Image 1: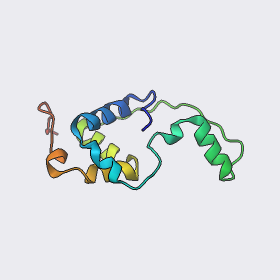
Image 2 (image 1 turned 45 degrees about the horizontal axis):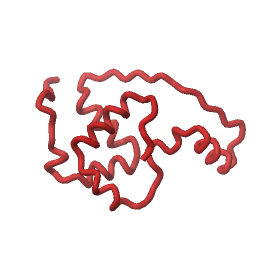
Image 3 (image 1 turned 90 degrees about the vertical axis):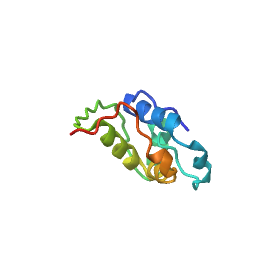
Length: 108
């Protein structure tokens, strides 16, 4: 898997998955592109050009997320980031999916 590039949000999410999740199930998934495959500008440009796109250009964007429920929203964001992310989450045992950090707040 490619390393999350300069994106601190993905670094937090992927770090939590590596620390708390069962990554051994990833090998049971059908082959597919890694979440960060197209973060590589050359790969993305080649794929878009091969698909018939022309004048392909890239630029970095700074995104800001505002949330009242950080833990829950990060989980939802990760699970919806790609089909593989969702499948990895769903394939975790109930014990793994139910893990919570001791300092997790549920107020809201």
